[in-house]
Length: 331
Image (cartoon, rainbow, N blue to C red; front, side):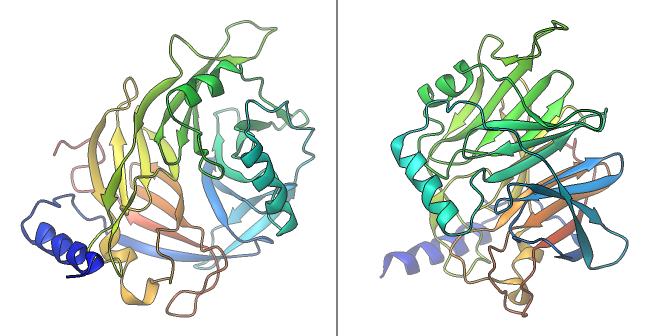
């Protein structure tokens, strides 16, 4: 028996035995997104009731989403990005890949996440530099001053080890920022802002790395040619004092507590996301954006210019209903 066939059979048996017991979320709607110059929707933020997104192919603009119709319109907002801070330990391989990304028309900054604070300031994550750009209503954009010990601690813990597998998501709460590291290893990193009114830098409070995890996990049985792939995080959301991680290859949203990053519960969105008409030819999941609220979750698809089975070629945002009992429910 071929390995892939064996894995597929195993996954089917595993599911039928009831061991894959994560409850399924119900999709309420889906919204193609028009107007993103580079496509590649990566990250979502709710800022005062307005949704924002970024593209990892655009370095000089972000997008405000007009959500009034079923097909959403992305309205470009230009930003004047200042010079990037000094590299924090990027390897030669990472610098080389960044160079070739720009030659291929990709963004040199590789924007992968976006967050908003109560003052309506936006925080944009550059995966290339493990840096965060602050965009405030009253001041020019500026890179946050983040202590170099953050990246050092992350690498010592086995994170940020591979080019294009660095930080994928960002959320902010008060003076704390959480970052989701993608894969090989994946994990959570937290930094805190100083209390000084003069020094606004961000630093490690005792430890930066909240949790790490590595290894393989099975794709859901609905995924064509299901196999074991690297565990990965592709975005992070914060709701009701809990962290929610987008487990891209498993097609799950998982709730984590904020002190140790321990995973508490997961919900699958595979049943509705992997119906035949929504399939792509990719061997991996393509979701890269997550927002969670009391009524449900927004999940964004970075289709990477691929066309899915029904002919849709634009980025997609799905709306899922909150699980029965709410996001705080126990298993």
